[in-house]
Image 1: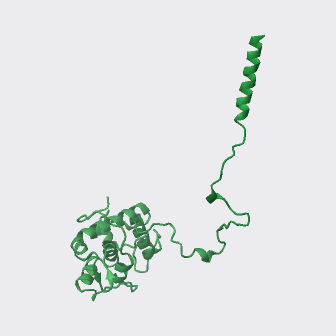
Image 2: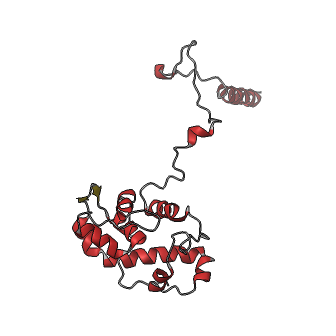
Image 3: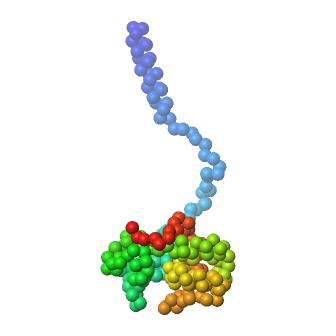
Length: 211
């Protein structure tokens, strides 16, 4: 009889303990989490008006190197690998045939059909120009010439537009000799518009060639 009493008592205790685990917890909500009954929540939904998004810079590439090359490519060709302009300049970054030869690219048809080669050619030319303009980058970086703050990325962009010689002439003349391309875009414009980007990772290489 005693054993049966202990058995049933144990069962009742177990049931009581388990049941207590399901009792509601009377939590206290912090005052700063409370809302008045009269308060309302405001939600901002995506706009259906395209005009609300015209100033967004997507993707958000900022001043990183990818931002530099994509901004320059858009200026040159709207980023189109198959672009050939009226003067015969080729590809996403608008290379001239002679410039391509200086970095080891001889086959223009292969160049036009190969986006990866175009990207390599762009970086290779940057390396070559950075080597040739190293003294100018060191001397003029951070200075203001003809109202434009000179930076490494601006110098490299301007050299892509008009060649190394045109950049040297502009800087040596304190901005008085500002060469323009056939469409009227000046070296000064590229120095200004493409200044301040991250190009430190570009290695300066004498006579750089596409590998």
